[in-house]
Length: 340
View 1 (cartoon, one colour):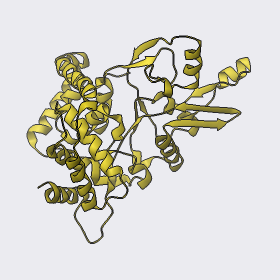
View 2 (spheres, helix red, strand yellow; view 1 turned 90 degrees about the horizontal axis):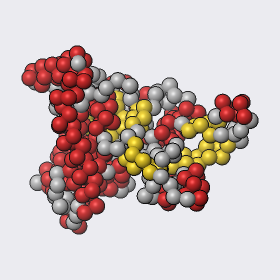
View 3 (cartoon, one colour; view 1 turned 60 degrees about the horizontal axis):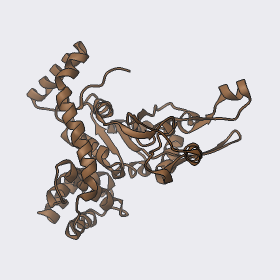
């Protein structure tokens, strides 16, 4: 597998990088959708995050990366093994799994293991991409071009947190909780509203227009491609620092306070923008809390809400044909009215 460009070396794109870090700290935020210009570093940032994430604790030998500290969420195999004795744990990289646009349904959800069926006459399950992504990230490049039947599958699994396979004489149920990360170009079509709503945050990625940033991006990319190992060594210290920051934020997250006053202002923002349902408030609160944890704050404040509100709310607005401004402008206007 090719080496990933260091996350810390990415120039600009601060909103996208912050959203990815927040999703890494608290997966309950619901994932990240990055829409914008081609060649602006969207895929680079996602793959860089995969290399940056600290390793996680898993049940040794489990096909689904079950957490040994959460027996209530074990797969069937781990439950059987746990009943027979103590399970061994191991450290494993957090999975970041690519979902190709042309993937078949069997490849995504899993299917009958044909090799074992033909060789031994056994009915065995071959896990798919959703199984591999459990407790990690499922990455969809060009998410707006994903076929409808795969979108329907993702919606079902994202809502339930488990994948159910009933086919070819198999009846399998396994945990499948993952963070959705999608990228795309809005010129190539819009995302289905049902899938769009499943993303916790939506960020706008634009090509830098200032000359120094463009020059620095090209210079760093050229250095990376000429000698990947040397470039990674230069940024190793920054990557370690960022990794420790994520780990510390995860540990700090449960103790970050969210006052009733902050919740009230979050609700007022959503009411002012006319968002449907309560997912907007929940995402805004979770994302602001994760941001506070990243910045070592003991409580969520208005500044955290102000910084994260555009990412958490811009994709949840109803279209207003009488208002010709973009969703980001409408969110900024509501922030000024509610938070001052």
